[in-house]
Structure formats: C-alpha cells, structure tokens
Amino acid sequence: MESKKSCSSCSDSSCSAKKQGANETKEEYADRQRLAARLCRIQNKIVVLSGKGGVGKSTVAVNLATALALNGLRVGLLDVDIHGPSVPTMLGLEGASLKGNPGELFPVEFGGLKVMSLGFLLQNPDDAVLWRGPMKMGVIKQFLTDVNWGDLDYLIVDAPPGTGDEPLSLCQLIQPLDGAVIVTTPQKVAAVDVRKSISFCRRLEVPVLGIVENMSGFVCPKCGELTQILPEGGGRQIATDMNVTFLGAIPMDPGIAQSGDSGKVFIYHSSETPTGKILQSIIDQITEPDKTKNINA
Ligand code: ADP
Image (cartoon, rainbow, N blue to C red; front, side, top):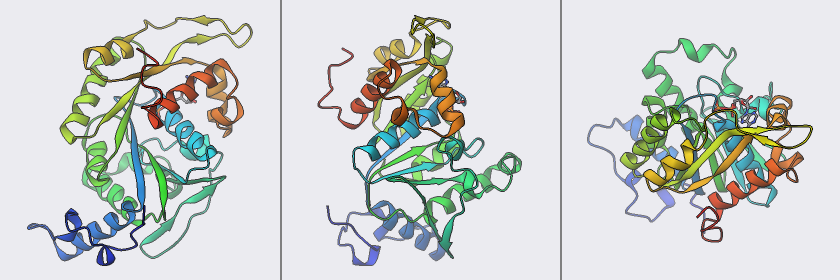
C-alpha cells in the first residue's frame, strides 16, 4: 500500500480529516490532520484492553508486538497506560532517552520494534495520578499526535485499563481501529468487566478480535503440572455468551513474571515452553484469524 505523507497530498476525499469540524478551532483541526497523517501510514491498529489493571494487558501487548516484529513486520508498540506504563520495564528500556523535534517524538528502536511509552515522558511515575481528567486526555491526545512512527504494518496499543474516559478518548482518536483484544482473569467476577469492555468496543464499532484468559491455572516450574488456583473458565464462558472468539488461556507461569521484571520478552526467550506455545497460538489467531479459525471450537 502506498503510504501517505501528508493530508494535503492525499486524494482520499472520504477521509474525515479533509474537513474542519463545525465546533473545531483551526488549531484543533490542524492537530487532527497531523494525527490522521501519522495514522494513515499504519496498516493495522490493534488495541489491547482490560476491564481493570493487573490482569496481564501489557504482557499480552508486549509479546504480541514482539512476535510480529520477529516475523519481520514493521511494528510499533504504544503504551498509553497512563497510571502504570510498564512497557519500558518489560523491554528493559527504563531511562531510554527520547529524540525529537518541537511537535515530534521519535519512538525508541528495540530490535525490529519501535516503542513509545508515556513512561518515557513521566519524570516521576506518580505524576499522572495527580493529573485531573481533562489534563490526562490532553496528554494522551498530544502524545498520539506527536509520535512519528513512519510506515508500519502493525501498531499495538496498550490502553489504560477500564472503560472510562481515558480508553474512550484513546479509541476515538486512533481511527480506524482494526480490532481489540480483551484480556481478563478467569474468575467469574471478572466477567462483569469483560462484558463492559465488549459493550465498549461495540459502542465504538471496534471489532473484538477475542478474549484472552490470563493467569488461568498455575504451571509448576519444577514438574510443569497445571493446577487451577482461581475459579476458572470465566473468559471462555463470556466469549460464548457474547459471541466473541475465545483466543486461549495463559497459565500463571513464574517465567512470565520473571521475564516482565527483567526486560526479557517471554515469547522471544521461552517460545518453546508449553506457556510459550499457548501464547504463540493466541498471537497467531489475532494476526491470522482466517488460518486458525476453528482452533478453539
Ligand atoms: P496489566 O497491564 O493488565 O496491568 P501486566 O501485564 O503489567 O498487567 O501484568 C501484571 C503483572 O503480572 C506483571 O508483573 C506481569 O509480569 C505478571 N503476569 C502477567 N501475566 C502473567 C502470567 N500469566 N503468569 C505470571 N505472571 C504474569
């Protein structure tokens, strides 16, 4: 696909960025055009969502992006989890220095992956907690508009948790989104959050690519046996109930926690383990749904 470098050189008359909105100032319109020109150069945009924090959303986003990059694709990973940007830690990129020009930020290159995280910009991780709602939204918008990804095959977005204003404005800004992956834990109580996340996607007309049930049972590091710790099956059940794809269940595996803390991506270092194979099958279904269609039927 031919990449479009700027709105003025683009002939797509159906693009909403071609016209200034009735309530939009000149500046707002120029910002929207700038954002559209950046997003136009990205072929597939996938957001990773969760009903709440701590369920493994960033873990899925990091492994998905890495697996795609390992396949030779041009991939960006955008961490907009404003309250807990963990991507820099998971990739061993804490303290990375950003390069840019006024109004332009270049992602950090990591292997074949381009990475941008709000964590690179926050001097103190507690800063964002103190910001008021509109300020957070302004930061997210500015951040999205400024990052210069160049041409990408995939952009994987690690969204803020929940279905509130922050993920909402993110999903409204990244248009069009090609799909959402929803990460949850297996307990039935988590199902309420998943329902909200699915409704959120449907309201925004973002296709749900599927549900990942994470921390589903525990794999003993000594013998490899899988033990169910939490009540299981919530993710699978909700997928059936709400007619969305169940992508698979990732066990609680100490190797995943260690890789997250040490900046060594699990799918790169542990792809041959049973958990690595499960993770890879989930990634294949997200990126090649036609080839893997009936895998969980
Ligand atoms: P979220 O993005 O939803 O807040 P994270 O991906 O940051 O969640 O995961 C929270 C913590 O749980 C991290 O320390 C991560 O390494 C760990 N973790 C995630 N999934 C697993 C798993 N399947 N097994 C073990 N630890 C996990």
